[in-house]
Amino acid sequence: MSEGHVTTRRGFHVKAIYCAWSLIFAALGVPAAAYLLFPPRARQSPEWFEAAELAQLPTGVPEEVAYRRNRRDGWKLISEKATVWVVKRSETEVIAFSPVCTHLGCAYRWEEQKQHFLCPCHSSTFGLDGQVLSGPAPRPLDRYEVRIENGKLLLGPARPRAESHA
Image 1 (cartoon, rainbow, N blue to C red):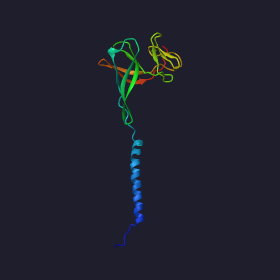
Image 2: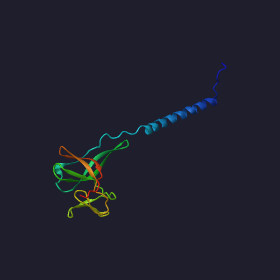
Image 3: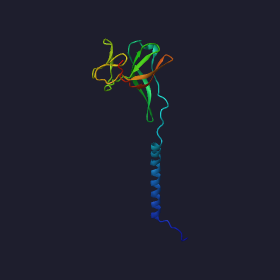
Image 4: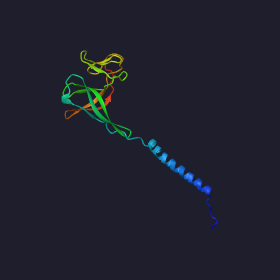
């Protein structure tokens, strides 16, 4: 036997513990560092959803349309039912409103006799163009971006609208 370095049982266990701690640190630290240093990929473009056939919508009358859309929640892809209020003004002009009141997010409905949208929770009323007629709602109804392709109504993201006094 040479006079060199002799490894003791205690020294071996200390080295094994340090190796285990290094592996644990690498397993937890590398993904955490990647998460903090590299931001997630931004969406290249907004997603568009098919909502309705344009020919089936009445002209000049608001119609609540139900449609299905897929959305990504983390790693899961979720298919959900959604609704939108659509006003077809002509074969080339369509307005799509978000189905929630801009006051507190309640669902509103179209009052055929009074010709306005009514939020029954706090009595906000909105005109056919989405403008606030009365009530505590602070701004007009939010509108979806719309596109018409091959006779189908496509919805993009919803955008809040500023109050217009024209």
